[in-house]
View (tube, rainbow, N blue to C red):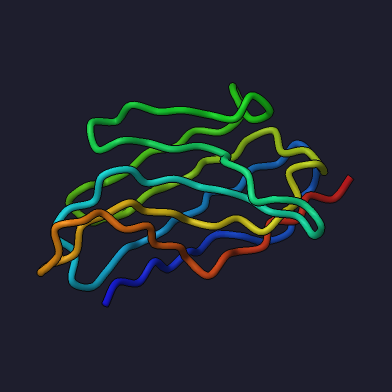
Length: 121
C-alpha cells in the first residue's frame, strides 16, 4: 500500500505565502515524478508544478516566478512554496507521484487526498 499525505494548506491574505508538503509512504521502491495539481469546483484538475527525480521542474504559466517546487528523495517528500498568492490560486491542491511499488514492474499514479488553499482578497 502507498499513501500520499499532504499538509500546509489554509487561509491566507492575497500577497501572502504558504508552503505545502506531501510525504509518500508505504511499499515504495522508487518514485519518479512528483508534483502538485489543483482543482476548483466545475473545472478540470490542472497541473501546477512537477519535478523529476533529477530535479528538472515544470510550472504552469500562471504560477511561474511565484511558486517553487522541490523534493527530498531520501524522505519521499515533495514541497510547494507558494509566494505572492492571488485569489485565483484558491483551490484544492493535490499531491501526485508516479512511482513503482515493491513487487511491481509498472509505474503507477498515486494521489493525495487534497488540501484546501484559500486566498482572500
